[in-house]
Length: 311
Image 1: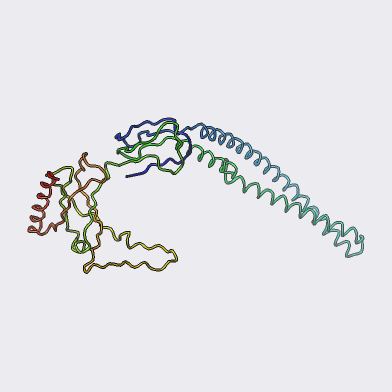
Image 2 (image 1 turned 60 degrees about the vertical axis):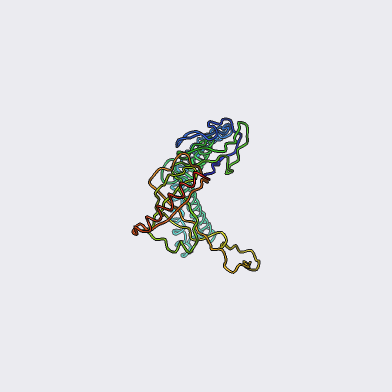
């Protein structure tokens, strides 16, 4: 049994199925009002277009920054040469100290300007990515559009597999809430039989064990099953950290009740359509390599199947 929940919220505008209706995989079940989600998609498309325009502007800024870098590089080399020339003259006392200081200041300013334009170019290129459409602006807008489109697609809820919708209580106008179950879906191709056995009997089950099963709804009919798996725990043994002292089970019985554990059975036979989730059955396990036990199990299950005619 699967509880189907929508991934978006909104009022239900259409219920496409009826109660206890058989559905196929991908069949439409119900529809949520998609007006605001369609609007969100349109807004995301506009935002993406704006991101592309901003990306073009960034490419223009890169070209301008590259040109400024080239110009600053030329100024830097000129300022460096000028400073070196004046420094040599200053050592020979052919120019004043103030002239040398001005040349040095021009050299420092040219170097700082060149460094600033180089960093500006790198920063813009980092935003653009490796090629057109790879800028952080465009990628973010694309992701936003993809999310909006995904939300829009989630306004229609489809059957996840072949099965039956049961206990349907949906009505047009009801409010669907994201991640809150709205439908009960029973996949008809994945039903199985689960039987609870005493733990003493579980110890004798092996890979060679098989089972005979007879259903209360189908008296006199016996079905063959194999042991698929068994559970490795029960709820009574589950402990949750609560800060409380240990709760000890108290029993006045001389011989306490045996613990039961669940065994899951599988079969290549299709489970009859007359059955439903929660149908009752009688199960007898037997080792397939022992004819005597197999015969005894067959007699026991057939007797149980006949008794189902009475009760």
